[in-house]
Image (cartoon, rainbow, N blue to C red):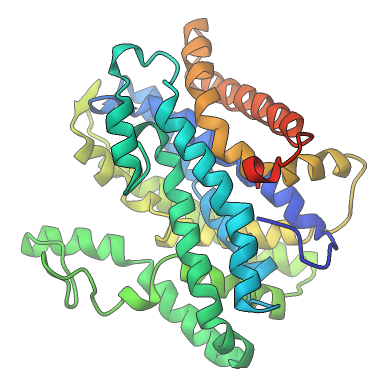
Length: 369
């Protein structure tokens, strides 16, 4: 989530950061249309359709951030100690600032539900309930810890061997669906060595976000395609990934509305939305490769760059703004897609403005990264 250490901007990554940041806010603006405080709630078939169509298209936002980090930082250069020191300043310190802020500041409309003591205790081990988006930072820190360990392999591995790893990782993106199949067939979701007392099955060690790290490295090192080849590969890849992601989500939605059920239903519905599932991986890699072709700085690039530089801060703060924005905008009586888009746009604009203003303060890097 930062520029190369040499100071040379990679233009397409600035475009991509801004787009991915908006996509995350867009996804979170959709959540109120299928989730509520008690679990799963979908008011109508129309809402179900809009949630499926819109969220499935933007689900690749989080993998795009990991691909970006890999493209910039992997293999690790300049020594492990320096790498971790920079990650601490740019990622950990701002994360701690905002995590504490979410714990001690009531959210918009929280009323009597705010529990300061409980939030602070919870913060010792995890993010608070009102800051679920911070899961991403915990994941990213795990990726950063792994990067120096696997960097020597990445520096020496052949193209063929790296492709073999990526093929094996691609197979692991089927795991969410294999779990569902095992549950249906055997009544238990464990596969290949997994059990209630052991989550470390055969595919555990080559699965997850580490695949995006290797993919980012492979793309930077080996993929330099023409526009024609990029479109020929990426458009069908995105279409297929999107169809898989949206189609499976739609199949899990009950046929009668309104849908009012436990959170378990939403978790089941989101099987194809998992960030390391097949459809999402396909759309993420396709989008990344398409953005890679936008290497020229257009007339509006300076504005994009200014937003990109504070994108981490926008991500960290956006739930504070989004909660209030949705509460206000949902009362305007607009149709579902317009409510979602307006909420996302307003949240993004407010957060981008606030982050840029904060960036002029001394020590702002400890707040925004």
